[in-house]
Length: 452
Image 1 (tube, rainbow, N blue to C red):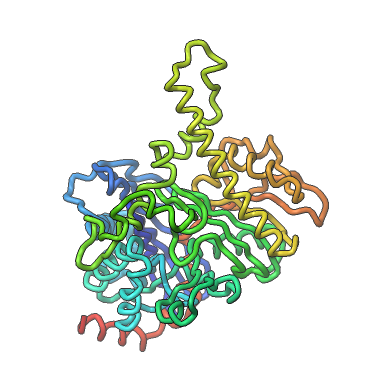
Image 2 (tube, one colour; image 1 turned 90 degrees about the vertical axis):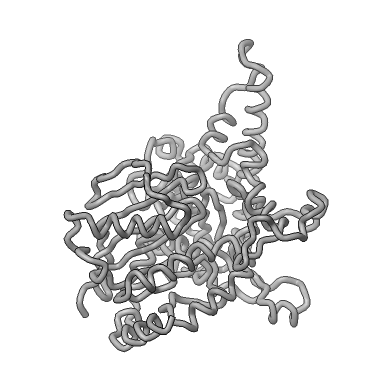
């Protein structure tokens, strides 16, 4: 099978990232370039472009009329095709595979070649993930038309968690209603957890199916996952990404009746709803108007940490009452996050019967906040985890996997940081699945595109 150029597309709520890989069947992908537009929800949007590991465009404000994820993807595609120093993509026809990150895949347990049937199934899942799938499906539609010779592949954040046992994924509600409405724990951040599992196993000198870890993907969206013998055993997110840990704008798990006491219009549709996207005020409040933003006024956890660890006004006569209040609320948010994280770690440690090879931090906060790592590990030290302060406080995590815990005996659990790479993981999955390289499948997809 010939090499192909693959794009890994990650459409978030405020950004779109496209990574370009040279892929060969059964081989590890080789990254050629990466382009990203950020700031879609806080204009003006900016473009960053890296080729061969070198920054070509650092943070250029985009003059074009970028009104959403589809416009952003079109500009990124144009940037790649028009780059004379990226000879692998001279035209759109040079792109062979497009891997799309889709948050909610329902019962799919592996990536899927997007056919008419697959697409309609994903559209039906919009009711389960109205705030998450729509952006990605919009770009899928665009790729079907703009890249007629490429195979589109859906990689799901939920697929890694298809191994969660029934007694863990089941909600204690009427079973007939649960089945008919597909109401169960699905879990998310699975693309990241797949990368974390393989990387941690390699670092520990084990096969992926031999490793037991508790992994933390901590960013503006945050979750925890218990991984047993290389497979998801439990995770903090549930039917939707709202459950579990709090985040930048998400409440995380709260008493379900809270929202009815919070506002009187929670059962009504949000003004942000469209004919294709139905969002209740309850979903909007808990997903978009809660978390750090509601508690502290900022979604920047770095700012929260900095303020939480600054001295309060009692230690400085020149500090104002406002500074003191700011310090207290930031410390509250920091302590709350640590408490919620440790709660899941303790639960998963017991669920794994104490057989844990490592605790793994990942995601923007997990990778960049030594204060959070230290606070979490200190609180769970009774389980045998220990932090190495000197290593943990280094300015930057440089390798894919780094150890920040103290090295004890063979049976003592390790503390690791993994720089997760969802873009690479999607390209790797496509490179390893013969279905995405089949000429017959190519022909079938072309027929579907013409019909669509």
